[in-house]
Image (cartoon, rainbow, N blue to C red):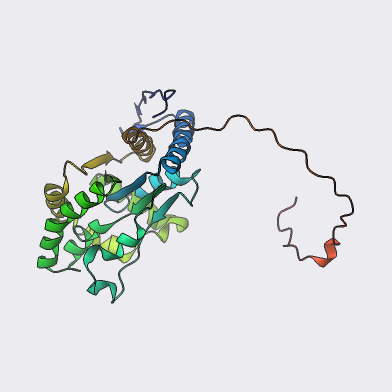
Length: 279
């Protein structure tokens, strides 16, 4: 991490519902500072030829997407990309389980963020009956070896589990029901998962017992407060990869050439979008 990185202690205050709060101005300032560090890290990853994989797992509405959005907001999508695979096709269901994820792994100088990953088999597939018991057991056996193989190949593998309380998840689901722009986030699978809270908890515990390995440990993000979770997660991610500040020196723009002999075509020859909003 660059030498000018100075962690700032986050101060909390409780409202009448005893929910953690964070000062809005402090949050926005600190988030931007962390995002600037992410830009520096991105440049270092590209120059050094690092290969970084970050897995984001957790319960529905735990805040994974919000962290991914803030992490990638100022990054170059050619270097840092998000992978969020849909349900497997009939052909993919017949492949080696990890096969559909391998093509999305990074080359040198790339960062890949998995918005849910191969751990679908340990969670939703296990609980919802989308895989057999034998397939689930084989996953628990082979996943640690698969991840050790990735690490031996030079990939930096980081795994985050977003932990949200039952009450907070319920509140977020209610919010999605009430707010039209969030309703699309609530799938039938999400609704079904609400009735299987304990089953998901047991599946997660079993998953941790088998896959929380030294070469690729699980890092748990407490996410009842989304803003605090975002700062904590991004700060932790930055702390895991040593990097140097490659920010370019000040640049002077060259003078633009004179438009001698150039005649611009008339505006009437071009099709402009309507001015729905006044300029």
